[in-house]
Image 1: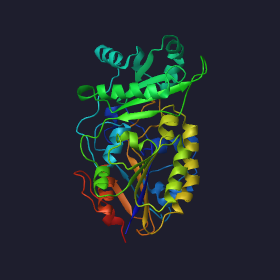
Image 2 (image 1 turned 135 degrees about the horizontal axis):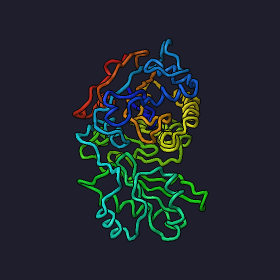
Image 3 (image 1 turned 180 degrees about the horizontal axis):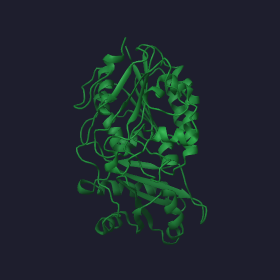
Image 4 (image 1 turned 90 degrees about the horizontal axis):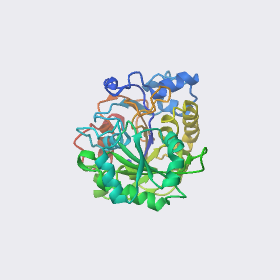
Length: 390
């Protein structure tokens, strides 16, 4: 019987364009495939042993092996390609319509309302790279104390402020103000607090970013687990993406290395339930900045760390590794990409080498978790537990 599941989201690590990718401007996107090709191959022996190379052609990752894990890939059924949508669908909630986006900036009346409620003026109001906009407007922000508000191709309302000008608690406060304001027609997926530091010519973002998501409109697998007394431990930005719903323990982290070490520490404790972690650097630091070299290095570092997690998997544990969308760092776009996500499952009490095929929705994962913990099933998704259990 499985008592504990370790679920790791390799944020933005997609494995090839979905059939409708062209509708999102993502034709040809293939985060892991293109990345490996540009780099001349990736050295990922541990992920390869789990079956990663059998899911998708990835230069340097062999496919002709006897995998010790089960493997497949999942399609996103919800419209969109943002983190909130992807994570919600993984937990059984499929959206009928995408979150609103603002390719030309936010409406004037919306910003006027935010200014009134938050007590700050704003500058910016356009889609932009986070590093570029603080380079462009950082000095003006320091002179005027106006908040830098911007968006991207995703459904986000981002607020950047210098830590010396707007303390973190104040930045989080105004972000919560924006979150309360942005509902209904303007219910963006996330409000993101983006603190930065430094001086003109050398501004840099700091790691205290906070995401303020909408609350899921319906119950997710996390709520079902919580209702049955199954603990959910959220590591990284998981708590933010679910607005705290269905989560018992929150462990904040600063980067991928911190996430991995926090997973390992959590596994050393006699805990049951779901350990749910997100490695955000692939997305935030490397995917959105088209830094494919750092992206590849980050994957190889994760692979090097992976045995420390696998060695702690007992007969009552299950390790699942997947993603929430793509963010191909080799294309001209700096936005998320509409892609399949990998699915690898490892445990000592399940079958080895099972090809799980192409799943029709991310929600198959949520349905599987529900079956394992014997809780209410989500409406969407088909469990694959019967395919892998001994």
